[in-house]
Image (cartoon, rainbow, N blue to C red; front, side, top):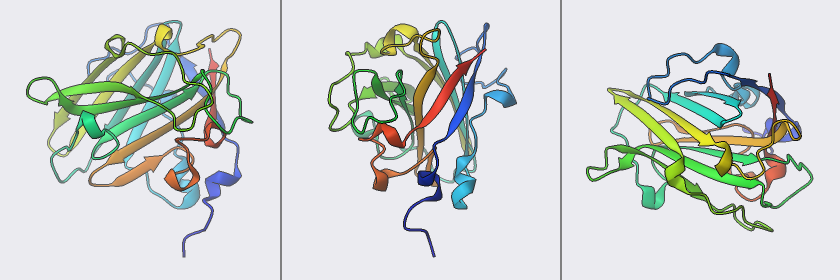
Amino acid sequence: MSALIPHRFLFDFEFPLRYRAAPPAVDGRLTGWRDAERLPRLGEIDGNTDFADVWVCWNETGLYLACRVTDKRHPLRCDPRSFWTGDSVRLCTDMRDARSNRRGTRYCQHFYFLPTGGGPKADRPVAGVARLQRAREDAPTVPVERIRVASRVARGEYQLEAHLPADVLSGFDPREHPRIGFYYLVEDADHGRQYLTVGDDLYWYVDPSTWATAVLVR
């Protein structure tokens, strides 16, 4: 019998995001990522087995993200017009980590990445930005062409890397504000959903207080 309230909802999670003076190349190969940059497998608290590996690191130029999904049985389904379906990776950040805020502020952002679905043949990776629902104030408009994204699709798996530059992260200030709100969700047509803290039933897409805290450490 599943719990009415996920166990992860009962905790305030905090973990380090590691500094990289020379960050990994954004080419979809996932070479050079370190075990210390792999995000914690919090799904195990609720008895779930994670199907994706997710890494994040940072430096003065912004945040770097990588994801690998394996054991896929069907072709990727990625449509930028409905990015929330099919196969995607989503990342939410709050550069002020205001854990008491139940609605988004100008420092809260929601990014999404698709391993395919872009370009004339729909075989190129896609990066985009979505609004947080019911936000008190929207973050400034982001030029999505500034976000670098790369992917490699092979039989039964895909790998994806992205760089979110400092100037697209609203309020990015590692020296004065090293604690940031942080959330990710991997949506997969084969495996379902893997999320950092809570799922749709607890409104992560509305409420930044449901996210974890990431500390930008050197």
